[in-house]
Image (cartoon, rainbow over all chains, first blue to last red; front, side, top):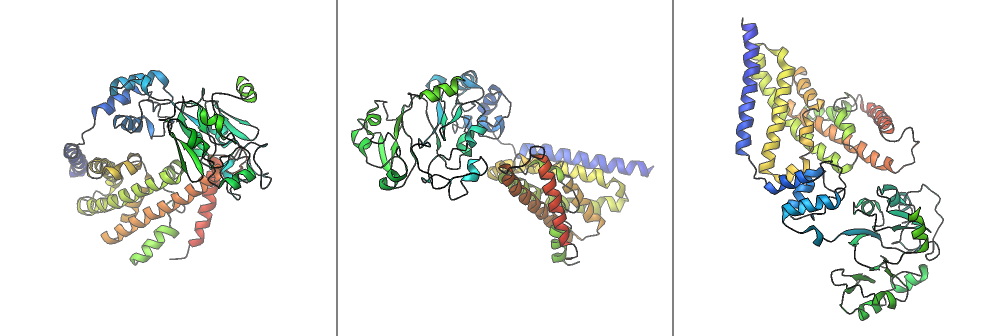
Length: 275
Length: 190
């Protein structure tokens, strides 16, 4: 009889012991969870796609509830999900700024000089390991289209050797921002039109030598901006988008056209995205 | 066997992934990125060490005294599953930072056969409690090493020009196989 009773008692006893221990532990180690997190989580699509940059919808919900992420953090859910989340968080979704990615380089094949001809794999991350890429400018777009490859929303095209982003299609999923080895894709407010499309921190003389459309650090934009939205750092002009009133004075005055009016699209751009 | 010999043997010679082929699921599952690989590595080290010590005590004090050695597998699984649950609960409260660092990986470890394998082999080898602890730490460090090596390779292979038929998992399995062959070079070290 003990042959049967012993194992049953041991296994059953251990199971019971662990069960009791765990239930005690769950009471002792209870963590107060913000009820908002649960509500936000229910409002999210629950696809755990990771496009928001957080580990799954639960991570995104926690970030939203703590105010670390905007209510529009879920790029896949779009306006509808954003509105539901905004209701829970008590803010207005319409007030939230929509951000879009923009490539901060205009040095295409005609405007920027190369230091060598790259014939390897068509991947920017590999080209960047060879002396920083084929362009003489060590800050510019490499043009292999790694961002184009990762974009799932048909928002990026390679035109004349540089990447351009169609802000209408951009969902701010950040994939291109992460993959770009040169870190020249950044998020800017959807409504901003004047954008400094250059990241070169080289002195103006050098920039003039290798690129006809780079920022040469002349500070004309800083002097002419009516709202003092420009700052100047590391040989490069920066716009504070909160102060910018889109008067476009800087775009007119910039001697190299490094500041671009992003609301005007080239014919080639329109043709690429029409097809 | 000296403790040092046990350590070297379990990390390199009898590496649990490359020589004993245990823990292959997490080895392939979470080795896409270096970051997740390190998270998993730490979590496994933590749980394996704790589980080995507790299973050793239960084996010696309960199973051996009652002559119930045949219940070993199921009891050990019970211990590991409850332990993982407990550690998760405790970590959440005590160290939220550590919890968020390896939170997603903790529940996955319940099904990591390496944890169970180490616990059972400790008993089979007739180790003492100290040797068991050293063996468990060594085993998880070996797993950690394997995970980091393959994660580093996979990060490089992501952007390499691999024939379409081999891209993804096939090339990872080939790389893992080659690495296993390379690890046989350590045979005879201890």
